[in-house]
Length: 498
Image 1: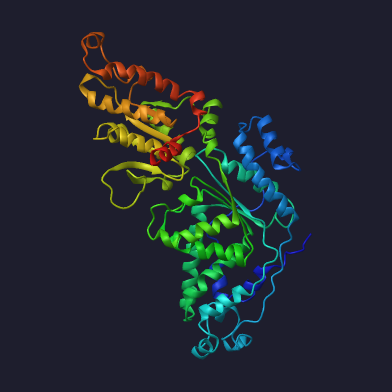
Image 2: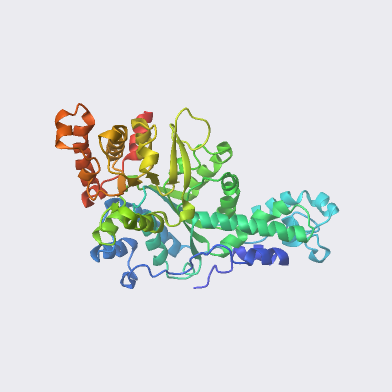
């Protein structure tokens, strides 16, 4: 059925200036269009729950009741999309009396959105920015598109898998060709690149008010890729992103009729928390909650990726030893858990959980990804420097997976290091953090801290005996049963605030 394929995008693209179209049409971020064939084709024709149960039956995923609850929201959207006709958008007359005279350079899309037009045109019809807003307000979308879905939860809880399942289930037109799936950071990078190219195109044409024209044109071009937009790992950390999100998504939702499905490690209310000029970002949160159903998956904060790696034999254990072990750990860390080295950066975590501003106490993390919930330290960084229990608890409250590498064999001569290692393990264990270790020599936990029988007999230090508990906990923390435990860091943090 081709009904609705002639839509509001045709209105906007009809009036693009040639230079702007050229600038925006060059390939930037790679979006996935169509089905990815990530799952078995035998699920064709089933609703999302039926597809999910097939994956469970064929041992492709682990059954999780919280994932099934999230599927209900996605199935609601899927059904509404199948019953929804993409609307026709009627273009009404623009406010300027010169707008119909495109040959004079004062009319059409180019003048309304800031490309072309004379000073007299601008004075006659108001500012070009006002004209642009007037044209946008005349694009009618009725009925309102179905409400999207915003899923947030812990790392590895299955959010992306569920979004993929939903994305691949839409095989009927128009949605088979009206959908796009892209990582949020790549999506925003593409937006900024398109804006930059559009500004350059406008500057080459020596037109006026280029900045007023750029974002509406980019919005139209973004919707052109597909009006169902699936964004993975929605995470606002950049002030440049934060300050344009409201205008960008207002255009996508209200002007272009887009529907958004997103995954995130942050609830809407926690987006851009502690960021610069956050007060200007807050209206976007209300907009997001209006256009997307919020689905929390924090009760499903189990990292199934690690479980699958261990149970499938792809990773023998979460304990790595020696030079060969560090290479295996790097492969797991960068390729599987993080995805790319570019996603990892040093981080200063303040005592209140913020990453900016001044704080009396700051924990420095050499390699971190907040959106992935992963932190990596060397033993020297985390145990040989002046850190205490409160620092380790802070780490456990913000990161569901922690990697510690280059752990040496310890003796009574490094008792302070031993003490800190015990505190670290206790703090991470308390929040069910997944701990991945690399030792220089030790092949099991009992070999990390070596104490002779004579030293034990005359030892007056609690650490000698406390390390027996650490050994037991380390053995448990590398087991499949522990990996299935829900990370409770976020809950612990909330309890502290009360």
